[in-house]
Amino acid sequence: MLSPFVAWDETAPRPPSDGGLRLLGSGPVAPFCAVLLDLGPQGVGDGLVAGLAGPAGSVLARWDGAAGVVRIEVGGPDGTTVAGTAPLPPEPTGQAAVVVNENRVTVLVAPAEDELRPVLTTREPVRAALDLRDPAVLGGLEYAWGSGAGHPAEVRRVRAGLSGPAGVRDPQPVRRPDGTPFTRDGRLYLTLTSAGLGWFPHASWGVWTLDLADPRRLEQVGALFSLRDGLVLGDHAGHLVVDEDGGRTIVLVSSWGDHDTTRGVHVRHATTTEDLLTGVHVLETQRLVLPTRASTWDPSLARVEGVWHLAFVECPSFAPRYSFHPALAVATGPDYATGLRRVGADATLEQAEGSLLTPVDGHWYVLASDGDARRHPVYDLRLRRLGDLPAPYGTNIPHPVVVRAGEGPDAPWWMVTFDGTAWAEDVLGYGTHGDFVGLAAPPGDRPPGIPAPDPGTRNAEGVSGCCAPQDVGPAPTGPDDTAV
Image (tube, rainbow, N blue to C red; front, top):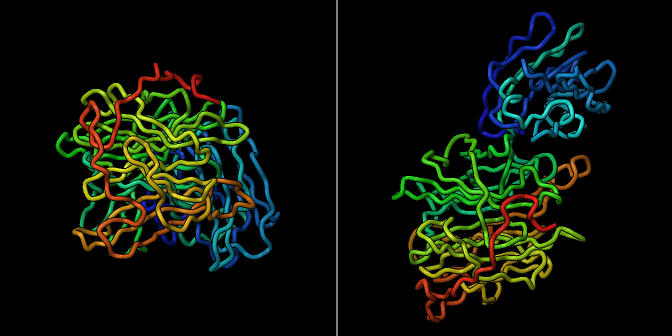
């Protein structure tokens, strides 16, 4: 339930003397947080409470052992609202938690020595009373807890901080502009979507490291949030390019943080001098003008022989199902966002995403994932189909990140991806997936399924294996122009 970014961790905490609330002095920088309470053998007592409170209002879970229920209470400008109520399990509660993901609030309990499980989750009543995405609201809230009066709970430990992922997905290596994966001390840096306790807007984005000597060692080192349209959001499914020569990091991210099918999805971007590979950051982003009128996500950026290339996913329709496919653009100016023009798209596919620009021994490919055919297509930089990766295809739509696990020609090739394994889907619904999955290839010069390059021709930009870009007219300028 917690990320490594814990703001408060206290053993044998001092409870409020009057049975009220104890404010912990700080609150989250984004509405993605959790408060966890370890309890004594008597469980939740008469009025255990935890969550966020302060001058801006409150969002609190209140456990009542005598009544056998837990409630979510939201205090806003119009008073206090009970946003949801659920019965408690009959077993004594050994641990209790409240998790905030965007405006969705989830209460979890666990018997002693067991795993936390959700018992209550709600969003719309919370959003109607107090919008936690609003920086003015969020800035007026602190982590809070109380043990209740009468028969108070024995609270043995209190922890509070940014929430962790129920699952991870959308992996993409952090790269330098030339496509080199960013590594330090044998660890590969990559970005992952952190699945929240709910749908796409309840997920967020972070930076992780993967030990290239042991793929079981995956560690979160950064958390990234978006400030746009006056709200702090969990935009995710993006790419970081660390441009050390330019003294900047390029941020590309998909606008899933407020997604619904009427609004669509688009790619956003920013550049910053901050070190995004560690710590917590809230980033202001702008819409990236792409050569399409469709919704877009999963950006992947690299500079190939001096020309910026951007692979992305194009979604022309959300009904009767989401229909999407890989696409590719190139910049006609000196920077990545200048005059992007379309190279092509594989519109024959309808469930293909995770479009990843991938270098293999100095040559470039676009890899993708086709959920209908259950395979990983391989393209050249004309977006011509070259074949498929011979790899097991798991559940959901696993994105094919192919990297060398180390330096030199003897280093093995790995594919790191994710699957559709969900957590507590019976209570929380779709969106809590997936598990991190690693695959390894036999030793060899090239990953299986990626052919040696055809010398081919060079286009007007001088890029080997690409083509002259197509001008498809002006791109949309606002969310109302995205295809539905």
